[in-house]
Each structure stands twice: as structure tokens, then as C-alpha cells.
Length: 268
Image (cartoon, rainbow, N blue to C red; front, top):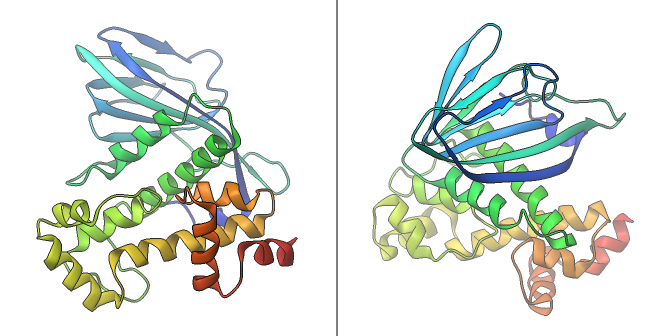
């Protein structure tokens, strides 16, 4: 499991995405020079077999594999066709030293009843071709969401609350997709309850609506980005899912007690 202090002490850079379809017998061979970057390998459908000096294992649909940089291995696509996504990246500590999430190739996630991971990897694909600042922010945001998903892997209490089992899956989906404007109906469907039932149980447990809960999560993330100091207010608004900058500023002031520019100025 990734140590919680990891998130406070590292920088994630050089994020790139490769995706597509590969057919039976296609081989990727890193046995001589090893990978140049860390990588997460996800299989939407199909199968691939990895070979290292000491082990052999199969990665199938819904599996997410971490591959450390410099690792030497061979991979062969072993299904008739395999749809995949690879997210490459580098991790450095504050002294510019390499950081490894895991020492070896590790199967770090298996998709269960939800499609949270599949949705997340699809988002990586959608922003992979653009080179603008918004896309860069989006990829970094998605990377931290992916790491958070790996750390959780199974449902766990939010804060000190034990989530009502009737809506737990929907709350989990909301947390993992809080930057997306999904309808409440989708959270309810994830929990196999009606929209009214989901809203009622959610309101009783959290004291606010699902949409307000989602927006408060966005405001917390916006504050982090503003304090970081490298992004404009407009860039932060876009990064946390607001297309209207004016509306973002009004909502931020209501939630945080100050306008975004004040937060940015104080921390710069």
C-alpha cells in the first residue's frame, strides 16, 4: 500500500498516455534496457502475459498493473484482441531523487462491481492528445485520483462516518468522479436504489445534497491548486469542473469565505 506521506513529498511529471488495440502474439520487449518511465498498465478487455526473470503472470480485463522504471520484462498479448491503456510517468521527491511506488511489478487493482477504474482510464485517453495547460492539469488530477483509488481499493469510512451500505457504491463513485458532472441518477443506479432514496439516505447521512457534497470536494481541490500558485483562477476553475469562471468564483467565496484571487495572493 502507498504510504499516506507519499502525497505530501513528491512531484509527478512527464505523464503520457498510450492506448489502443493489440492482437494475439504482439510482443513488447524490455528485457535488455528496461522501461524508461514508471507505468500503469490497464486492460479494458482481453489479456496479456508478463515474463520476468523470476515469475510469469497474466493480466486480464479490469486489472491494473504497476511497472517500475528500469524493470526488465517481456509482455505478450495473448487474447484475440486486447484493448489497453498505459499511463507513463515519473515521480521525484523534493531533492529530485527517483521515487518508486512499488519495488517490483505489482497487480495493484482489480475492478469489482463498479466501473470506476475503467471510467478513469478512459478519461486519461480523452485528454492524452492535447498539449494545452488544461490538459496538463487534467492529467495530473487524474493521476492523483488513480493513486487515491489504488490506496482505497475497497470501500472505507469517509472521515469518521461509516457509509450506509445502501448507498456506499454510489458515494464511492461520486468520490472518484467528483470532477465530472454526472447526474445523481448515476450514483443511485450504482447503488441499485431510486434517485429519491439515494438523495434521502445521502442527506440524512451527510446533511447536504450529493451535488453540494461534490462541489465542496471541488472547492477543497481548487484551494490546493490556488495555494500551489502556478495556475490562474481560470485554469483552476476549469481543472475542478467549472466552465463558468464567474460562477466558480461566487461558489468558492460562498464555501471558503474569500474569493479565489485572495487565496492565491495570500499563499504566494
